[in-house]
Length: 47
Image 1 (tube, rainbow, N blue to C red):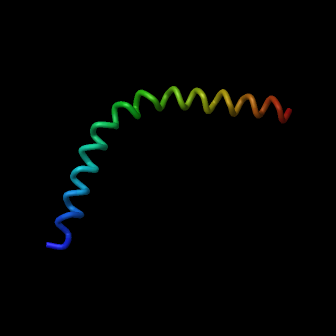
Image 2: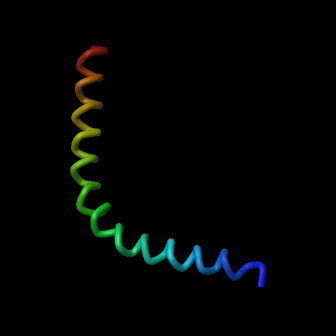
């Protein structure tokens, strides 16, 4: 009885995760490119 709310929260969290995963997968390459750009910029500043 005590773990029922916890289980419900986990299920809702999983549904949210399934909803957000495609968005995250779309955003990830963009952020990766941005990260590489920033990293290259910092390396240029250091050298």
